[in-house]
Image (cartoon, rainbow, N blue to C red; front, side, top):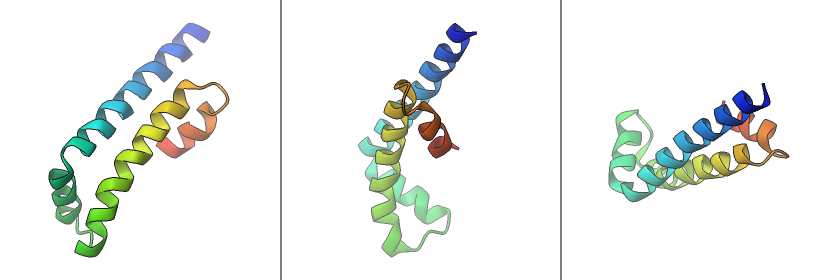
Length: 76
C-alpha cells in the first residue's frame, strides 16, 4: 500500500511540475488563457505568474512527507 501511495504522489507531482514549467515558459499563452476564461485584463498578468508558481510549490510539497497532506489540499 505504501508503494502505491508513493507512486501516486510521484505521478501527481510530475503532472504539476510539467504544468507549472509549461505555463512559465509560455507566459503570453497563459495570460491569453486567463483572458479567455473571463479574467479581467488587470489580473491576467499577475495570475499568469502566480498560478505556475503555485503549481510548482504544490508539486514539491507533494513529494515531501511532512507537507503532502497540505499540498494535496492545495492541489484540490
